[in-house]
Length: 171
Ligand SMILES: [Ca+2]
Ligand SMILES: [Ca+2]
Image (cartoon, rainbow, N blue to C red; front, top):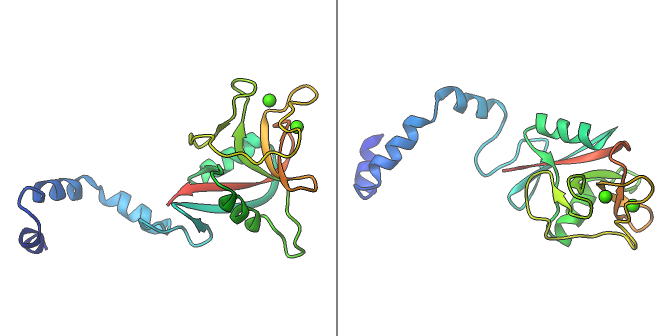
């Protein structure tokens, strides 16, 4: 096998390639295959948008329990970065009757009031709040859910509330 690389790659690249191959432990490769993960694709029961895989979880639980569940699945609660991506996500949260379920995304301002962040660490560079939201109502609202009220946009609500959730992970 090395003979082919030796012929087709500049000699300076060959040591890099060899190093990379040797550093991938066989156990890790087996694990990845068992999980059904290949580079550039999503596990079979996840949906693909851009460079991410998405999975709707219908069980209703708190924000932190939802995030923990997503972590166990190899991801985080989903972040949103465009209207098209939001519409794609809405399609995943729609049931057979066309009802859009209230669903946790990974947005929170629990660290600093008014400073919203995504649990996956990505930039908070797109928003789709409903009118007069986020309003941090009552004793405070620090977590973000989608498909809120009639407009099906975003509300901030107490993190203890229980909703379905949307997980995402990198391809
Ligand atoms: Ca808040
Ligand atoms: Ca609110």
